Length: 106
Image (tube, rainbow, N blue to C red; front, side, top):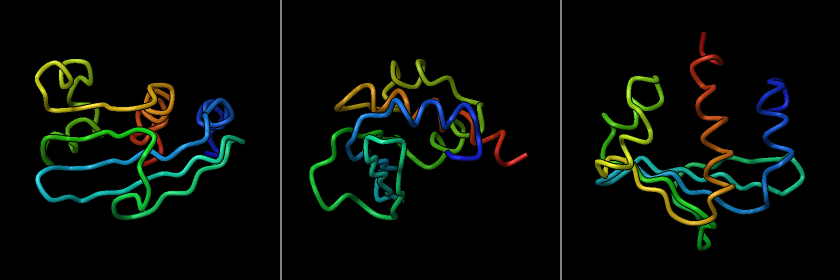
């Protein structure tokens, strides 16, 4: 986040907490721990404590389509391909950063 001005700004507004990202049926899984001061650390696997929020994808195909900008997030929520749970600001701010992944990879 520190090298991208948009992500840096979003990160500074991020509340402290743990966001878990899950792909059904059996992974992969990851979680991000936000410190509430603009810092974040990402880990592989499920969170070891109860997460503050979670993003769950129906399968790897849906996750890939979403990360590559080929699947509308709101539509995916409506169809059940994407499930959000927990602290909404944590999820929403993470989604802003994740939307920028394609820019990072160019």
